[in-house]
Length: 458
Image (cartoon, rainbow, N blue to C red; front, side, top):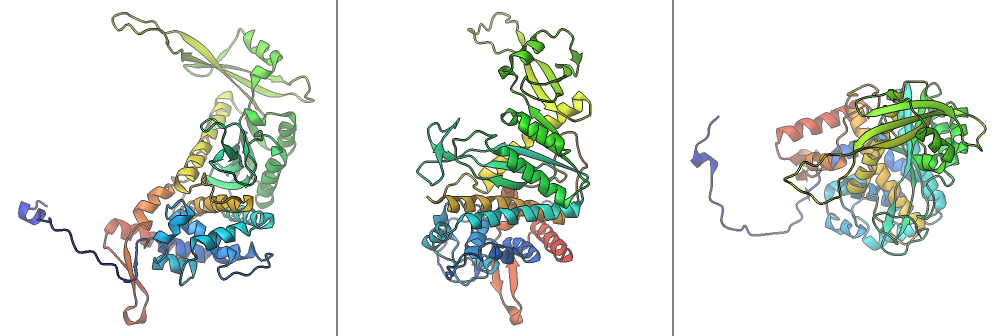
């Protein structure tokens, strides 16, 4: 419909007068969706069970503080001091079950009072939430990715150490090891470590524990694992093979003179695609007991030209070879092995979302347990956002070669802009609690879809 200019434009030069009144206005009306999710799964009660062993009983329980941190991260805030900017928001009060929020000092003291048992209980709760959804889905194939991520701090914090840090050299950091589920993009578990450890330092027990948890809930499922070259060792390879786990692990072939010579002397390479050739062989390092399938891929790449650029002359490009070696026990073609292993890069996307959307890289306190709790709150916020979308939407695709997620997940930042950050007013016409929002058709349709689906899932 075509509108006239008089119906389109208006004069608006005067700045309106500003007033601040207690009108029961909320800037986060979309939190009602997460309130429905938290009520459905009983999140507050589950968090309460994580801190029953603590003898101190403050006014604001530790479970309330952790739930506040989850909501804090869902709203997109980073520093603990930012709590004061939404301290009077009625929707935040309702989702937490409080009449007033704790101040920043109370939150900080509560985090400092936590211990290792509290952190272990929170890890267990996170695993239970992820495993419960996997049990409901009943997937025939579960793919686990293992890798670490550096969390730097510009000040001293308990448990940090100076280690390898490509972006911030010399800074103290944590280096937690993560296990993510490729099909759902959720973090199954994490192991908090100082920043000066190697990726594979003690990783065998962590990997075995994650595999055992999956087998307990889905005994018939085929479990797969993907890792980079830092995890290449006979202990991990033998453990995965004995447990019946199909794996691919990158091989640091430069460290093995015999394998390097085998690659250099190879004359016959089989064609994989236009740029890649390959061969595979049963091989083992000298100190290993058993042989495994080693897949060697040679790709043709254009070499960077570093000489002076002469635009009026033709410069021929030179091509060289890049090599990649993968050890695996998967009984499939090399093309499928390479596609499966390259899908491991999706885990970096999960790390990026955790750091940019749920502030995983923020170190709020000087205590180790407090920082671990904040990290687990960030992981729970991410996992709960994925869980809500899994409950409210159907799978978009089946298992792919790269084991891409089965849903087209929206990042938390997108959900925040579309739904959470909506203005609203809480009123009680004729005694019925009512949340009034702007009549935006897109917001109305999506928000009611979430609420109706969560109500039917109870």
